[in-house]
Length: 249
Image 1: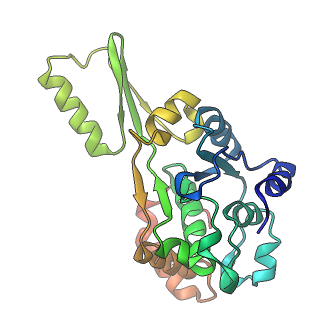
Image 2: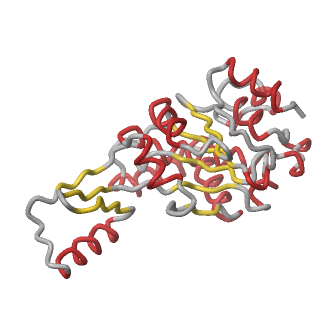
């Protein structure tokens, strides 16, 4: 296993990992962040004592048709493998993981869902004990922010949260006139303080622990969309086309 200093040099060379200062894996966590913009905000907003940030960019390798040696050398996946520090496949050793929480933080859109599916499929196939041990999480960034002069900002993570927030404001006698609503299109729209407050602060954030059946479903979807069997893929796209605005496979 690479020592932390040597690992930092490798990943720093690639301009990727912003490591934490803590050394105890049980207390440390790494955010795998979609995009350099959100990655920059996360690096500024994090608590450096226990939170590491690993931005990803571009499209990841299709693990459906790739050998382990090709995956190890892939410039998108290599930083993930090195950061976690426990190997892959038959060589994966859960006792060597460098972070107790591996948190996927992606936009709440089709591209973000694509990134999550790719990463979950990769973990399922090459680092399955990481999921079985309960180390993989999905961050839940807010979808909306309600703001008004003289009122604390209200962050809503779902459409149901938004409806509830409006109802509570009505009950408090706060008129909706003058309330501005911001719909976040991506993590990059949030400044470091907002990202910390809504998505990274352990006291306030919402994390979803990935279960094995979640990863299995991601793997099935990935196989369907990226495999060689055309007919099931065509049927899936036809059945789900009405829900998709920007399908990018």
